[in-house]
Length: 187
Image (cartoon, rainbow, N blue to C red; front, side, top):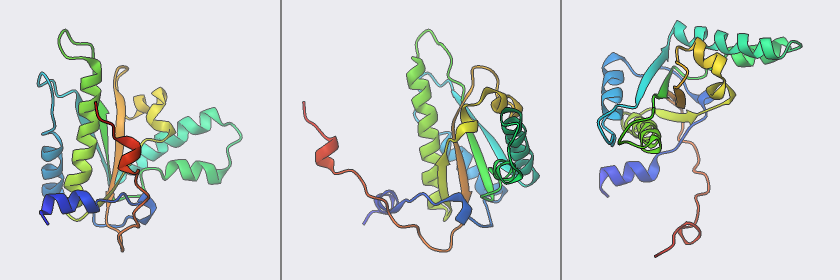
């Protein structure tokens, strides 16, 4: 089988809590980001950017999430705060894909947003090809403007996804996939 087809047929997400070191090194990270930025981009706008959370940066990001959570949940227990603090610690590296889609005279907003989604998918495929497992997540904090501000996003930017990267001991089981008969029509 063609290696690209085999990769696409066998790619699986893995829960970040199962991910372990090592994460991508500097050269692998540069390659991953270079490949992810080669997606279709009508108008050559690069309507996305990356935030790399690694090392102590993961803990600082988690602290920002926990602070916002605590401000909104005054009676939050330590267990809940620890969960929020650990959001970026579950994998050796997390890459935030930020959508910078903005009104443009020729390029619809939707096309720019889909380009950011394509970046997420390209990143997961490239990471899988390098032997990593990934999880593309957006949890509550991906939609919280206060958290996003603490992570360095400006008002019009959104998170397309937090891509968690690491290694796992065994390949995760596949999940049920939709039957083509249920999702394909002809015109």
